[in-house]
Length: 178
Image (cartoon, rainbow, N blue to C red; front, side):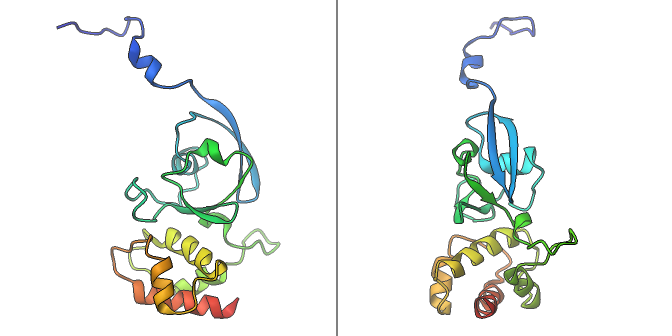
């Protein structure tokens, strides 16, 4: 059995790693960001590891839990399934960018964030950023007329703590405020 030493020349494994980093410009939360990334890297990885925006969570890495939900050009996407390079020239909004600036630098919470707090719509909080981003999208898309519709259009966001009744109450309350 041959043993590879650090001095050995790169073999076929090196070619499988891809073409190397490329310069990409992403609009994230209203700011233009220039970063060097591998073309095969997910948006979730770039947000968390490169831009230090850790609100979107890594849950399943399969697009089934919704913990990584962010918006790209105002539409809900699963950041774990979205290649970051496909977001070049588009606007990405994360939970960190949802709060509105108030001129002091502190920012004002979005009504959905306020209602999640008021309705106690979280327990452990792990899924909360994805739930909130999806909930705002649900209301903006006009899919929050009643509990059945909210349940259907929020079905891609899983809460292990089963705070669903509180989440729906927060969505209804925020919907009525906006």
